[in-house]
Image (cartoon, rainbow, N blue to C red; front, side, top):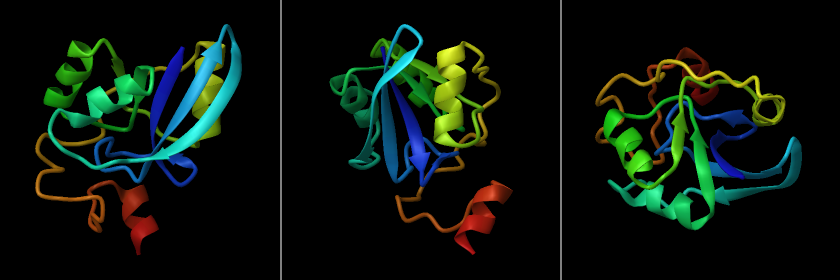
Length: 132
């Protein structure tokens, strides 16, 4: 199984579509077989679910995403798990152990509209501190 994790540095990005990169983790059984980081090719409506499907992703893990994005991933056969925070390696460990629990999306509806990858203001305190 391959999972995609919205990535900002070594941490899960709160904004899946506007994250700088994605970590693609390939898992067999309960072992990490391969991990690579790929640049986010850009945020366009409907593009990223197809792009990540082409990368082999069966699951996307993010801090948050809108309902439309969640629907587009479901239409592409990719499970979306939101409400995730923390270090990428810790999240992968939770996936391997079967203990990763999703929650409520960290983004408010419409919060990402009008912003590109260079978004400098954020409603998430931990990201706001990182950008100051």
